[in-house]
Image 1 (cartoon, one colour):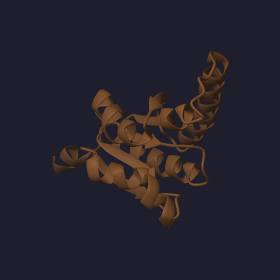
Image 2 (cartoon, helix red, strand yellow; image 1 turned 90 degrees about the horizontal axis):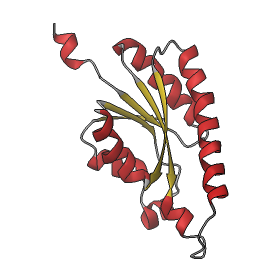
Image 3 (spheres, helix red, strand yellow; image 1 turned 180 degrees about the vertical axis):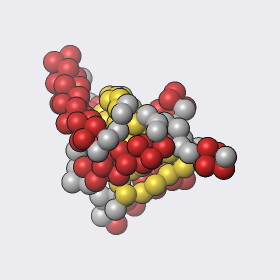
Length: 149
C-alpha cells in the first residue's frame, strides 16, 4: 500500500523548554499516533555555552543538575505526548552542539524519519552572529523536517 511507503518511522521532537515546546510536543504526538511510531523527545545541553563561561571548568554537581533539570522538563512533555495518545515516548538528554546533535548525530543513532522542531527564537542579529538551529537542521539533516510555528 502506498501509505506504508510514506509513513514516518521514529519521530524526533527536540525541545528546549521555550514557549513553543508544548506545541511541538502536541503536534509531534499527533503525527506519531497517525504513523503508529515512536516519538523521541530530545533535550540538548549545549556544551559550547557551558564551556564558554569564562573558561571555567564546571563541577560534576553542575552537570548533574543540568541533566536533572533537562530530564524533569522532558518527563513533563512526555506526559503531554502520552495524553495526546502517543504510545511509545522516549526521552533523551545529549551533550554537544544542538545543531549537529539534532541534524546528524541523534537521527543517525535512532533511524529518525521526521524531525519536528520550532522555528528560531532568535532575532535577525542573533541569527547572523550564531545562526539558527532550525536553519542548520533544515540544510543538513537527512530526515524530513517539519517546522512548528
